[in-house]
Length: 204
Length: 216
Image (cartoon, rainbow over all chains, first blue to last red; front, side, top):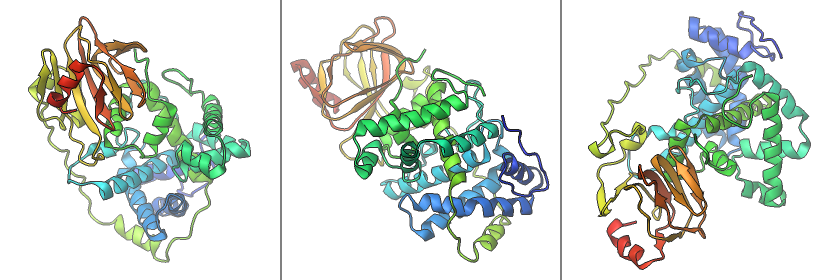
């Protein structure tokens, strides 16, 4: 298991724990330097990620700005035992994107907390929920690198471009069953690595 | 114990935000009660975050950082929590999330022991229907097929059909070609959240008589 990097100087480091420490500095001290470092690290990646899902460069950058602003405002809600920084920031951006798409489709104006997934950063911890923190995220990152190319490709299309199994099958000219089993294999392998069993609950 | 869960396809679709309002609501209600599926969603977030971290960035506009640093200086008051909307009397006594009960205004009886309460889904596609169905103990619903896919989330009590037995927390997806005649639990009856894409096709005469009254 990789030990978290507890450097508190606010320097962004690619090692596990650097980003989590930055968020802690923001939560505890409103550390502007830490925020700047986090912004420089994540905003360009968020923009790239969201552009893959059909947004223009301008829209993608707006969303990246919104997501990072949310990180600043909600840093006190982040719990590194339950999520890595990248998982949490990814979830914020994903929720924003889904909210925006739903608002664009909405006919009547209705306040709707349902657009916010229960995976959101606002949801309190639950005793049964698996503790998947920063260490697990680092392992997942390394092992995604090590996946067979065809499994990585299916992951990329699912998470970058939000494609359904059917869309991926069409895009890669593969049978639907093949796409499903590649995704299942990739996720099962990752699940095994972080010790989340197939049945209820899980512990690192 | 929950034995029936949404499929992997459905969890992924929900995670990606691809579900329409009815199915999305049914998923949210299930996730609220099911740690197993919440952990599945967590794993998907974990993979998403790992991919995000591995991604190459795209260049930001020249003033992006200055804009970001300026925005965090603006005063910010988090929106006050909305005052809870009280659930209608006929829904009290069940442990239902407010996100569901606030969408239910009224119920109407469609026959002895059976009532339906429409669930407001303003952005759902025109031909879909989402509603609560309450069936008294030991009743058999008319046999019906499904014009489109149907999802059922058991909120209280339970029911059985030829394919299995279902209890509180269970999430069942039926395909368009499935036909069934569900029977409610003989002691507790059943309260379900149901969402489907096209109006249900009743197969028996009783069902055909019931359909206009139920407006489903």
